[in-house]
Length: 123
Image (cartoon, rainbow, N blue to C red; front, side):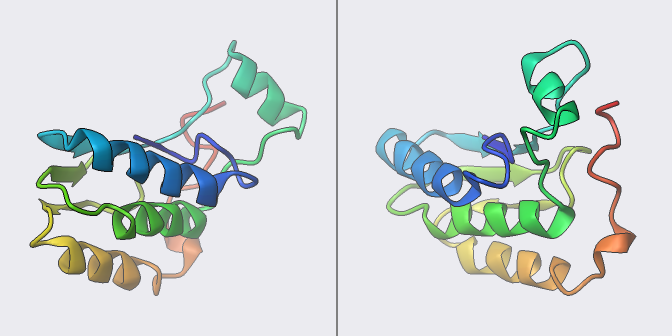
């Protein structure tokens, strides 16, 4: 799942609808990556023109939290362990769901200035 691919306008819809799809599939594992538009792509052009807003670190964490909160009835492993992500979260659903949500809550207490700039890796 690509966190932030819906931009600021679609962040909640993206989190909820992505969870709904995975609830139907019950995959063995779910891996999260935070969206970073690459030069030469349509999304990068839209971002540069101000037509697409990258999520701030806290916005990306909130989208991740909403996504995890909406995962129901599945027994997947979830990994958010890529350098593009703002916080490493991993666990087995459903037993580690609350632990993962608490880890994100903790990350949300950290000042956004302590996280990488959302533009790193995009320009």
